[in-house]
Structures are given as structure tokens and as C-alpha cells.
Amino acid sequence: MVSPSSSLLLATLLSLQAARVAAQLPLPTQPFLPPSPDFGATPSTGSSLPNPHWSTLLGNGLFFYEAQRSGRLPSTNRVSWRNDSCINDGQDVNLDLSGGYYDAGNFIKATFPLSFSIMQICWGAIDHGNGRYDISNQTAYLDDMLRWGLGWLIKAHPSPNTLFVQVDSGDADNAYWGGDRGIPQNRPSYQINDTNPGTDAAALAAAAFASCSSLYSGRSFTSYSSPASLRNTSYASALLEHAQQLYSFAVNAKGGQMTYQTSVPVVKNSYPSSGYGDDLTIAALWLGLAQNDSTLISQAKGYYDQFQLDAQLKDSVFNWDSVLPGIPILATQIHQSYPQLGGNDWQSRAEAYFDRVVSGKGAGKLTKGGLLYYDQASELASLNPALNAAMLLRRYAAIATSTDKRDTYLQFAKNQIDYFLGKNPMSVPYVVGTNPNSPRNPHSAMASGGNDITNINTSPPVEAYTLYGAVVGGPDKRDKYYDLRDDWPQTEVAVDYNAPLLTLAAMHVMNDTTDPFYTSLKAGAYATKKPSGHPCDPVYSCTPSLSTGAKIAIAVVVTVVGLVIIGGIVFLVVRYRRGKRLASSAQDPKF
Ligand SMILES: *[C@@H]1O[C@H](CO)[C@@H](O)[C@H](O)[C@H]1NC(C)=O
Ligand SMILES: *[C@@H]1O[C@H](CO)[C@@H](O)[C@H](O)[C@H]1NC(C)=O
Ligand SMILES: *[C@@H]1O[C@H](CO)[C@@H](O)[C@H](O)[C@H]1NC(C)=O
Ligand SMILES: *[C@@H]1O[C@H](CO)[C@@H](O)[C@H](O)[C@H]1NC(C)=O
Ligand SMILES: *[C@@H]1O[C@H](CO)[C@@H](O)[C@H](O)[C@H]1NC(C)=O
Ligand SMILES: *[C@@H]1O[C@H](CO)[C@@H](O)[C@H](O)[C@H]1NC(C)=O
Image (cartoon, rainbow, N blue to C red; front, side):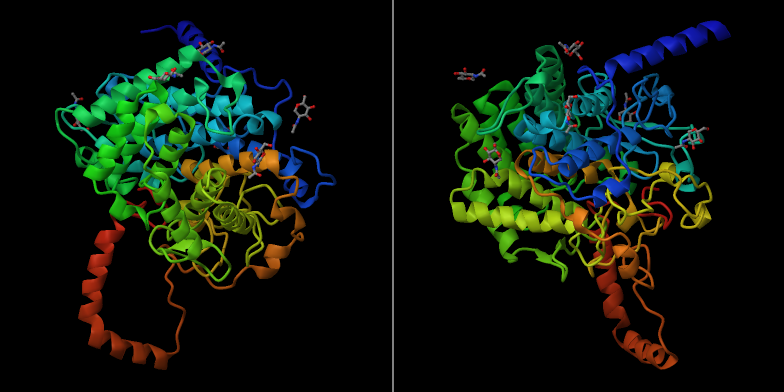
């Protein structure tokens, strides 16, 4: 038994340590804090770089991650309404698994989408870090954000062949809607290991470690360079060691290669994976870059062929479950910058993929309002596939094989970014707290300030805290946005939704003197366009109220084709449940 005074001392020591391990670059003495949304309604005057609005958007995007922090918060915490939380995570397995990020609107910590997000952010910082993050004074916050996530991934990887893939509040997550001080504390930790592996989760974590190792060791791609101030060889090699062990675990686990939900069925309710060939391929590419090893670059092509990924590439989207579209782009960047690593057979694949996206011949079609929309992948968060496509297109444009292609890719990306930032039928910039027309009701238990799970939308009437910088799910296929807290496909926030925002904002910081679209929106524009009725998405039924006559007519039709439809629905539900976030309750998507 420890005495109260020694446990106090221990707590103090622990919190000092937490403060020390977060940022390595000194954070600004005058912290960056998001300005009031009115700032985003004030067009900038000049042609100065960085444009103050793009710079603020980058700062706000990073600030969102700080609001999602779990564990003991450091003394440098900027989010005044957040408290220490879940400091005993890992107790069930005698480990310290505190820290990291809450994945989305509730209190689950999920390794698979976190790995994806961190990989994406390190990638964006490798190619758009220098000058971009630096000129906005955000490099230290980038370092802080990455180390908070990587520090937790390191804890989640306590031995070479063990990776914790989820920590949550178990069944209690279903029932809990409230702040960070009342989170149910019986929190199980779920692992993959040598006998019960998960190829996808291990490989994607390896990709996260290897990409960030490349960032911290100063690897750079043609015409870009990563921020010099981040360079730290001892940190880069520590990250590389985790990457190597996890890659070897993914490839060689005694239990074989399999999806991680095979070993940990509970993740079927949050982030089940539809395959692991793409994860193995991208891990081999990142590791090849980090290790300067052409054998790994050829191994990547080996996986790509073995898992027949070429056939899946053309209509795939880039997200936590599918990194496929990123593969030819990363491979091309690596080849152009480090030709001795090989990998010269990817560029035509990258362009064939992009040409399909921009021509509208692929699975993604533009909505009436102009958003790139994929029937299945966009249904639960419409902005995510579009923003990831814009981010990949803008990244790749600089090395396109013709100026025609370059211009077409940049224009397509610009249209998606403009839509995202307010040039849309709702006049909503879909980032919380950046403009008076921004969403007011993100699905976030912490930010809402409510604890009445049956009245999420109205209790309290006004969301308690502004979740600055959070990207929401997005409008429905009809471009309509309802701003309802319980409508999680439209309003939920997530660490992976924000990842493309960082890279996109960083890209604009350096090159774009013009404001993001939202500075031209009139105050109250959304109020005049806000749709009546209710959303048409997986949470709300799409059926409008009907007259009795119409109901009878429908009943007749339903009787005739009922069996056919039921057969179709069973088929769709089976597909729907694969590889997607899904809901077991209308209140809360994860549990
Ligand atoms: C960055 O910091 C410098 C020095 O404090 C300051 O002059 C500059 O205005 C800042 N830039 C931005 C975009 O905040
Ligand atoms: C943090 O604690 C304060 C003081 O108890 C409380 O007002 C606030 O709502 C808490 N924050 C969250 C996110 O629950
Ligand atoms: C290995 O992982 C499985 C699946 O999560 C778990 O049931 C088992 O207890 C783990 N083995 C050890 C030795 O912890
Ligand atoms: C490099 O990173 C390590 C590990 O986080 C840290 O201990 C060290 O202080 C860093 N070095 C510099 C020069 O920032
Ligand atoms: C990478 O390897 C090549 C050849 O094996 C070598 O010439 C080059 O100097 C290495 N580069 C780095 C950064 O280690
Ligand atoms: C952005 O600016 C950099 C450096 O000034 C330049 O090399 C690059 O071509 C520009 N990119 C675009 C897309 O304009």
C-alpha cells in the first residue's frame, strides 16, 4: 500500500514525465489558439504568404487532435475544457496503455485508423512540411501531435509480436454519452500476437512508424523537403525499430496471415478490415524508403501482384481500410527521388487511376453540387473519400507526365477543396469553428457537454464547447447537411477525417495567396439554406411521410416484389458490414 503523500508524489512525477515526452521542439511561449469563427468571415487584405486563413486552418486542424487526447494531459495543454482521462488504460494487462487519441465522437482508442492517420500526416509533412508547417509556426505543434500518437503506439507495441489494437469501455460504451470525467473505467485492452495475429493492423502500424521515421530522419521527395527542425536521428531509429519488428510480425507470425478481426472479433463493431494485401504493400514501400533498401521495394511489388491488387485499384478509395490508391503514388515518389531503390513501374498506374477519377468514368461520381461521391464508401462520411482524393491529386500533380494532366488534377482537387470549404449548396465550410456558417453540432460526446443519451440533439440546446478544427462526416448524397448531433454519418468527427485537412492546408499555406472560399460567405448563409425535414442516411429513414393512397400503392408493390427485395437486402447488408464503420445503435456508431 502506498501512502497518500507518496502516491501524490508519484502522480506529480508522472505528470512531469508526460509533459516532457510530448513535444521535443519547444512550443511557442505564446501558444497558437484558434481565433473566433468571425475571423474566417474577414477576407484578408493582401497577397502575403502565408495567407493568414490557410495558416489558421492548418493550426486549427492540429488543434483538433489536442482536443482528442486521452490520458494525463501535459502542462502545455491548450484545450481549456479537457481533463485527464482514462489514466488507467492497460491495467487489465498490467501495462500502461494510457495516452493516445480518442478515435472519434466517443471514447474508443483504435490502433488501425490511428496508424492510417499518422502515416498520412507524416507523408504530408515529408512532402509539404518544409516551408509550409514552418512558415505557419506550426512545426512544433506537428511534432507534438505526432509524438503524442507515436508515443502511444510505442506503448501499444510492448514486445516484437504483440500489438494492442483497441482499448474501449466495453459494453458500457453503448450506454455512456457524457464528458471526459465520467467515462466508464472498466476498459478492456485487445491485442494481436504471435498465435492470434492481424496482418493488416501490424502492417499498417509498421507503415506509420516507417513513414514517420523517414520524416524524422529527413528523407524528402523531389522538389520538396521535410522540416529540418524535426530531424532527430535517435528518434528516427527508435521508430524504425518498431516498424521493422511490426513488419516482421505481420509477415512471419506463427499463427499465419489473417485480418485482425479474425483474432479480435470485437473490432467488427468498429474498424474491421477488408483485406491485408494493401497494408503489406504500403508497409514494404515505407520501410524500403526508411531503410534505403531496394529489396523491400521489390517485395512491395511482389505483394501487389500476389494479392492481385491491380484489379482492385481502379475503383478503390483511399481510407483507413484501403490504402491501395496511395501505393502507386508513393512508389512513384520514392522512385523519382531515390532511383537506386528501383520501383520504376508505377507511374502509369498512378495516372490511369487518377484519369478515371477526374473523368467521372470510375465508381466516384459528382453530386449535383460537385462533391466526389462513391456509393458505398461515401455513405458514412461523404467528405472523406473526396478529401483524400484531392490530397492525393495535389500531391501527385507536381510529378505528372504532362502539363495537361497536372492542370486537370489540380483543377479537380481545387473544386473538391472549394466544395469542402463552403462553395456548396449549403454554404457550409465543413470545419468546426472556422466560420460563422461552420457546423455547430459535431457528434462528439466531450464537446456536446450533454449526458442525456436519449436527447442528444437538444440536451444541451447549444453545444457546450467549440471543437475547433474538426472535419465532420459531411453532407448526404443530395448535398444536404442537417447539423444534427445524433446523425453521426454527417456530424461525427474522427482522427482519420482530419488527416487530409492537415496536408491540404499545408499545401496551400505556401503557394496560395488567395483566401479559402469561406471568407466570402455571408453570415447566416447556412441558416437560409438549412433543409427542412430530416436527413436521408443510415441513421434516419429516407422515407418521407406519405398519404394513405400512396401507402396502399406501395403496399401492393411491396407484396409483389417483397421476396426479391429481401434477398437483395440480405446481400447488401452482408457487403455493408464488411470493411466499414457500422452502427449497432442509432445514438452511437461504435457500440
Ligand atoms: C510566426 O512567428 C513569428 C515570430 O514570432 C511572427 O512574426 C509571425 O507573424 C508568425 N507567423 C504566423 C503565420 O503566425
Ligand atoms: C472537465 O472538467 C470540468 C470541471 O469539472 C468540466 O466542467 C468539463 O465539462 C470537463 N470536460 C469534459 C470534456 O468533460
Ligand atoms: C493473444 O491474443 C489473443 C487474441 O486477442 C488473446 O486471446 C490471447 O490471450 C493472447 N495471448 C496472450 C499470451 O496474451
Ligand atoms: C530526439 O528525440 C529523443 C527521443 O524522443 C529525445 O530524447 C531527444 O531529446 C531528441 N533530441 C533533440 C535534439 O531534440
Ligand atoms: C542508399 O543506398 C545506396 C546504394 O545502396 C547508397 O549509394 C546511398 O548512399 C544510400 N543512401 C542513404 C541516404 O543511405
Ligand atoms: C508551390 O511552391 C513551390 C515553391 O515555391 C514550387 O516549387 C511549386 O511548384 C509550387 N506548386 C504549385 C502547385 O504551384
